[in-house]
Image (spheres, one colour):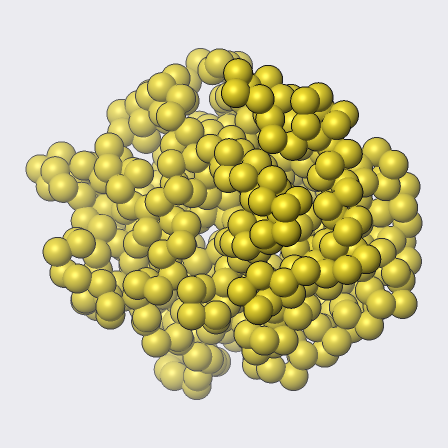
Length: 498
């Protein structure tokens, strides 16, 4: 799968709440691997306290959960998983905890919940909202391969359509991860993250895990339900992925998904009563966008003293396609870019890359390939990934090159494993799987596939655009999911919301 597009799944109202708030996010000291005492088999007592940098009036509490670095050696080294919660406001009718994973893999659940908890106010009445940075992410021994300047240069150039250059880029990145990530690198896979979820459930004091996962979070939730069906409570898996799909096939599917979303975006732009500044027809608008990308390919531009390449432009377009709400921002950024002002495109690409206002980066773009490669034994070569890119270039001239990133695991310094890809939650309570018909990042066909694999799930469909259904201001979706999570009402099989 293409690490360029396999990305965090905050969408709609959640995305708007979570964008551009990096400067005032909590600055919890990252937990590092240490040789502390072994994990006690009895549930831990979490020491909830203030979140550094967050006013008490915001209502958040933070804690650290201790888990084994290697579950095969429970008496060995441990690491800390950073948690955040916002207690239920209606304490008399409190259900328990609702644990979130907002996607990635590699997205910070702590930062996202701090930024976007208001989007879940209805659920917050009866649930403690809880999220976390999974192992290897930001505050939980977050993987750091490159410093900020190095990562900025890497993201501006990778992927490359040249096999020699792509090999140089990916090998350099993988080597830096091996040198700088520390002992956690072999242990960041989804299987260990699912084990961490069970340790978390027990520490929270909940008899069952109530869970809302987006995008990659659907894989994590589905695997938890496979491992612990009897401990699975009310679970919603929004914008589902299919863990059984291989990396190259995922790249093909995602590229086609983004191309479809891009076409829908152009159609919407030229269909506006006020007209589309990119062109009067979709053909003209597309030609203008391709001309801009070709110009940046030949002669990268500048914005705020920083380089803007064709890769930055592609990333900006992909970022905006995650939510229909961002389409006007994309139109403005492209229009200004055509006139020489590339700042809008750079800002969108920075959102995708996890760049903060101070120039630092979250661990997202470093944690992401580490988790992906830990989750599979498949190691498609860079040449094979480049072939996929060439095969799709005519069909998707903007996005096809991103398939080249799928060769990263062929040069990765640690092996992966495949057990996380087997999904079967027989015996679990009904799970709600949600798919969006025009989702670019987790295309709709993956939702019914995951539903079938779980064996205990029902499919809920949103006819619409963007990545993520809940929080897109669709009353049918929001009411159905709220009713399930708050009252246990399972939606009817095959429900479609328009």
